[in-house]
Length: 316
Image: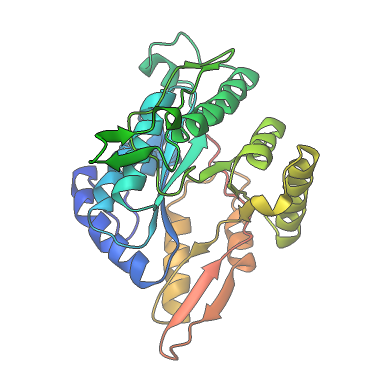
């Protein structure tokens, strides 16, 4: 069963990105974020239906680059299966084409079926995935630094286009990755493109605190969100990094309607579509109880936002 007002067929989604970006830019949002999942199966219909068929996130942001002018565009890349040179090249191209609006969310993947889709016998264990992710970040940044800011001389009188000293190789030889470089795309306008990371394991938090520019966290209460932010900043300091170099965001789920009653009706309808396991029905009541309802500056419109709600278990 499809949720209210959603597209029931993936092929129809091509109509929606331009409308979403117009609303996003008009609302003053800082960025659009595109997640990813590298496998599918019938089990996702009830557990995570939005994962059944997805547009490749890099393709999505490249499409939106041509129909946006201000908003940031963040694409998810799975470091376990992606190629660092190809990733660095496509994102540098995006940053050049959008004049500095690219971002990348790096994940290591939690879907074991992705291994078979990429010629692997099994999904790598946590340590191996994060070891590769750390090298992946280093590879990206070395490749983005291939061109010095003054490498392009463009002196027609002397017949000199570039300064060879300003073109640097990556020369990464790690346990998991080998990348020579240099990158054959001009230096990104941002220099090093912002890196986003989300996760809860110790290795994930370490990667976010030491290598990411933005950490996405999920916390059931504001107090836990504050504590997680403090932990991430402490890890950053221990690694010799300024804690202010890491930004931390906790997601919220906005539900917008003309009235309080209409907003409550939308939330209740969405919750009714979630097949909860026996014994977890109280989660629906808890979700509604912890929702925060706020009124927008326009008197005739209500802007309810749900946050700090407990996760709903599907029993799957």
